[in-house]
Length: 320
Length: 229
Ligand SMILES: Nc1ncnc2c1ncn2[C@@H]1O[C@H](COP(=O)(O)OP(=O)(O)O)[C@@H](O)[C@H]1O
Ligand SMILES: [Mg+2]
Image 1 (spheres, each protein chain N blue to C red):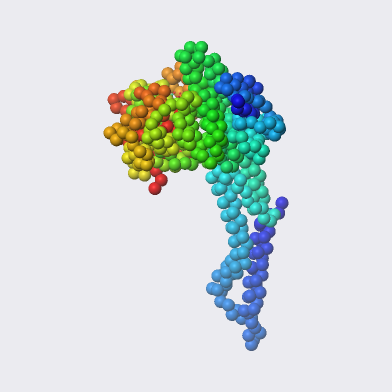
Image 2: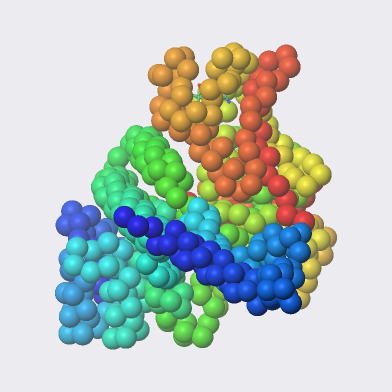
């Protein structure tokens, strides 16, 4: 197949050479003896030729570059999560075809992500409706039931709800950028609230307010506290420390220090050391913590404590 | 006369249980499964409030809500699943009065249902009651309820509670808190803010020694929890 772009370059080049030839003829004249005299000196020829080609091809390249720029912008926008990004298809050359392919691919991605979201929304609803039934059933049993057993059932329901939330959240965060909520979040207040869910968790910290998704940040704290409670040992302490330009949230506990091999893999999804297997859990908790931290421009890390104990540290940048 | 609730829920067993539960709390429940049926039903006979599931087989619950709004001004409580875009549900865009994610605590459903009904009763212009789990703070009537049962505190303490609740999720220093309730006549000058807070706690906390609603933040002040049960 003949390349449109190539043809156009070729034609433009031929055109500019022709222009140069015509120019050359104009600047030639015949002297008294009938000999052709070149008025234009050879050292001007090449620059002049280059200039001619440059001028002749300028509109073509400029237009081409503009179109490529637009395409680049669309690709960037798609990459940044704007799934509705498309480019206008102009002409019938390779760039146009590239634009068409891009639009097709972007359309497909948009469709898939929408389907994925629908599936998640449905799964969330389908899983939670029966859970709501169980919760109502517990309530309907009424006062006659053993309150301890009722409380136990409520705890089981909460645990199941938590697992569903974790699994759905993991697959939602993996999906292409979903901007999520963006609100002013008082991190110290959030930490205080989450610590109050447990007895004997100490909170020590400075005031820190930043924008973010409150639901995700709550999940981050809850996962860390939940881990300290289930896998670690008392005393558990949450510390909020101000660093230049960022805030550090550490959840410390006094359990036996993790081995180097374990600590390296903690943040991998589904990683659970053999010793943990009898505890309930998905192994998604810490990977979610990291994903949430990264979503807010920060990160999560593990630090061992002296002489024993484990510390999970989340660093979040504070906007100016 | 018992207040009539239109329940729009496609899960038959959940609907049956909800009818029983709400019936036990003194409501008359009319159940329909489909969005279209809900709109018909509402046109035929008025009801005091609508409990509407977000996902219905025939229509999106949000569409139902929008159409319902054009036909009736009964308050709407949406049942959603956690993670749904809830900010769109409540407020001007769709007109639901409140929402509750599944699996909800049944008593919270009752509290919220009562709150939206009371809000209509108080007159639409009045401030909506604040609901935190089973706790209900009716700013217009200056009453406080847990599980529908009224608790009494002094008016200064009520003002303190409102100041805290309106700033839920934010640490308030003692000074800020005092400023917020400055207009209130302090009935006992010798009591510090901490004493008043502990009185409020005694009224609203399940276990005042381990408060979950009003939490002390060492060296900073108090925070009213945003997520309560
Ligand atoms: N505070 C902690 N102390 C000891 N081990 C921990 C702690 N936090 C996490 N771990 C280990 O890391 C593993 C992964 O944690 P996580 O991703 O939250 O999954 P899960 O809690 O579901 O097992 C846990 O199974 C546990 O072995
Ligand atoms: Mg965990």
